Amino acid sequence: MKAVTYYSYDDIRIENRYIPTIADYELLVKVHGCGLCGSDILKIVQQAPPPVILGHEPTGTIVEMGRG
Image 1 (cartoon, rainbow, N blue to C red):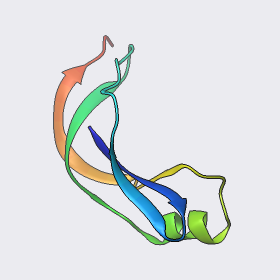
Image 2: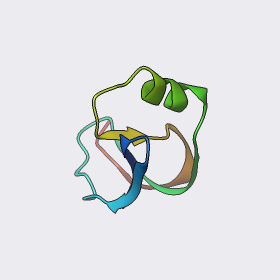
Image 3: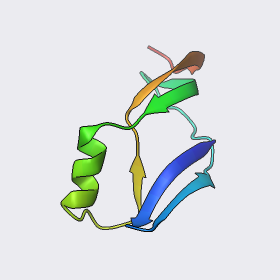
């Protein structure tokens, strides 16, 4: 899977990440797109300690469901 990761003002990368194993009451979603919004910019402005994975407004398809 891919993630947009903020390291510094001039170092934002698209990186490969592992596909997580899901637990009970969780979903695994294949993300088709993800927006960046004001709260992502706020993380950068407030100097959250890097690395920070940006984006929390995904759209996608459920590919696996945990029990429950």
